[in-house]
Structures are given as structure tokens and as C-alpha cells.
Length: 226
Length: 111
Image (cartoon, rainbow over all chains, first blue to last red; front, side):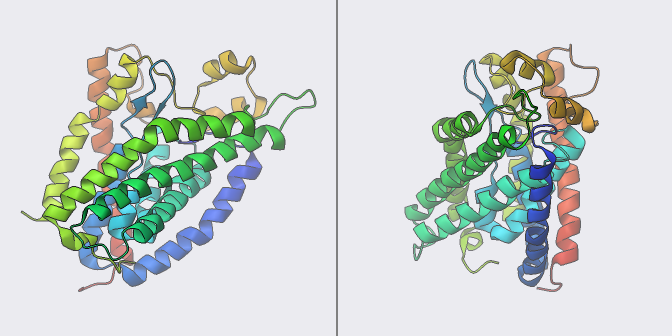
């Protein structure tokens, strides 16, 4: 769901850049307070995993492709604000070096995948795993559910952003100027494929890594991280 | 072994597996992600190229477009897989460098 250049009109692109500014500022401020020097490598690993997980395009045979983001995992381990920074770094590198996601759409793509996705996932995981012991199975499935819902929340938003374009920008004879499909097509398409397929990949990746960390480094799952 | 060491190794394994993200869609004849079509594809889909999209789409000239080398478009899947792995290595190196920098600037020292 890396929205390319040309799919969002200037109103939407500008809106999400402006919306992300206070979020990035808050993330920097909060992470500055909470992040310890020894957690910095984990931040870099989180960003790197998110970067590479997004390269695993999963096919719908004969149809489109999609991918997980790994952002809920980053949020569980680093807290949502640090995850926001890590995913933002990955998305900016993808846009600048690989043309994956547009330059004009960095604000929107970050809003969907670096803000909504980790925050929805993080708080859902927190609610579902409340008081559960660090090594419990409840944490594993809470992580899976959080991954699934987080990715779908981001996909829903991307669908809304695509779908608003023909309403916002069209020629006198009704041709779209930017993304051509309205909400009635864009939202079901984006949400449908993520509910059916890509969301499960995010769920499985998130749950499996949490299970692995329960055995290998349960201290990473302790709460109270900023 | 420290957990971060294990995670770095895991990252290396994932990088080597990354061409699956190229080969599986190819094998199952899956196209672009929804809403990430090229100009020609969009013309086929809706019958015209939206004017603003046409103008904005080529805005940025990425050095490794779509995780591949420029001029390798006609090469086989093994070449593309190699380019994909190199892209993953380059992308991760830059991502790690940038996040370490950001992290260093933000993190409290000595904790």
C-alpha cells in the first residue's frame, strides 16, 4: 500500500504532510525521553525488518500483490512512537532509493503505515495481553490479532485516500485527475485483499516473532516501554 | 549469543530469502499492488490516463527503481533476484544507518 506519485492530488498529499508534522515532532520528543542508548540497535533492527518485510510481495494468483509491514511487531517491542520513527525511516528510504511509494505521498504513506498501523496494533496488543504472563500464549495470539487489525486499519485508510481523489479532483467531463476509482471501489479493494490475505501474513509474522522472543529474550516483551 | 546478534543473523537470512517477494508474484502471474499501477496499466484499466497522474507520476527518478537496476528490465529472473538482494542490502544499510543516527541523536546516554 505504498501510494505512488500521481495518485493523490495536492490537497490530500499536503494534508497528510501537515498531519504528520506534529506526529513526527511528538515521536521525537517522546522517544527522546524514553529511548535508552542500548535500545538504539533494536530501533535500527526494527526499521530494517520493516524495510525488508515490505519487499516480500505476496501474490493473489492472477491478481494484485500486497505485503506485510512488520510495524505492529516494531510497536510491541519499541513502543508505538519509536515504531513510528523506525517505519518512517524505512518508508522514506523506500521512496527515495527505490521509488516504492511517491515523494508527494510520503506524508500519507507514513500516516497509514507508520502512525495508524503501529498505534492501532500496539494498543490492541496491550488490551488483549493485559496482565498476561510474558511467556503466555495469550501474548502470541494478541500479537497476531494486533498485526491483522493494524494492517487492515492502514489498508482501509489507504483505500479512503485513493477513493476520495475522483471526488476532489476531476475534469468537467468527469475524468479523474488522479487516482481514478471512487470510495465504492477503492475501499473494498484495499480492505478486501488485506482482510483475506495480507493481514494474515502480518498476523503470522508478528505472532511467530513474539513466540520466538518469549523463548529467547522475554525481557524485550516487558511493558512500560515508551 | 546476544538477542540483537541473533536478530541481525535473522535479518541476513530474510535478505537472502527476499527474492521470493519477486518470484512468487511472477509465478502466480500477479501484477502490481492495487493502486500502484504504471501509466500503461492504468490506461488499460480505466481507458484513459488521468491528467494529473500523468504529470506527477514521473516526478522522482529513483536510483534503484522497483528494487532493480536500470537497464536490466529485459534480464532473466536470476539477474532480477540478484538485483533484489543487492537492493535489500543497500536499502537495509541505509535504513540502519539512518535509524542509528536518529536513535543516537534522540537516545539518553549512559542508560
